[in-house]
Length: 140
Ligand code: HEM
Image 1 (cartoon, protein in one colour):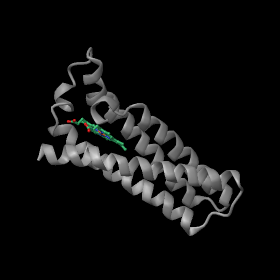
Image 2 (cartoon, helix red, strand yellow):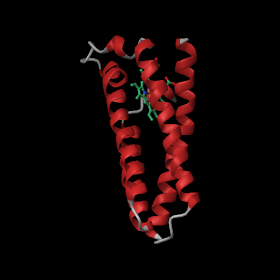
Image 3 (tube, protein in one colour):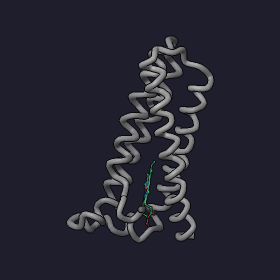
């Protein structure tokens, strides 16, 4: 069980990050080019949102069964233990909240520029937060 969840979280991360990068780049290009917000822009952002939420859900399960998750929460003096048991989960939950807020806000906007801006801010900051706390040494 642990093995499968750990490998899934490790592999799905490539897809989730790729789709988030594509969503941020597409949204930024739409915003700065002053384009109209179309169904295609919505779908591109939606794929990023869904992939990131799946990553979050699998991460939450992993946290309770991994020897590097909750099990290490007492070891705050060790930087790598702190990263996988506290910083990575906490910052990623915050990132997903920002991504979700960006997505929800765009739906309430009427103008294309405002839609692009909501997604760009939420997804952009969310992606930077995620990248800042990936356990790179474990992953690559
Ligand atoms: C979009 C959000 C997330 C991304 C992109 C992400 C990505 C990653 C990556 C690339 C690794 C290293 C995997 C490896 O060892 O090959 C990892 C490990 C880990 N992640 Fe996440 N993660 C995310 C969210 C979360 C969340 C929300 C939690 C917990 C609440 C979590 C818990 C963990 C744990 C415990 C590990 C260490 C697993 C182990 O090796 O046993 N992750 N994550």
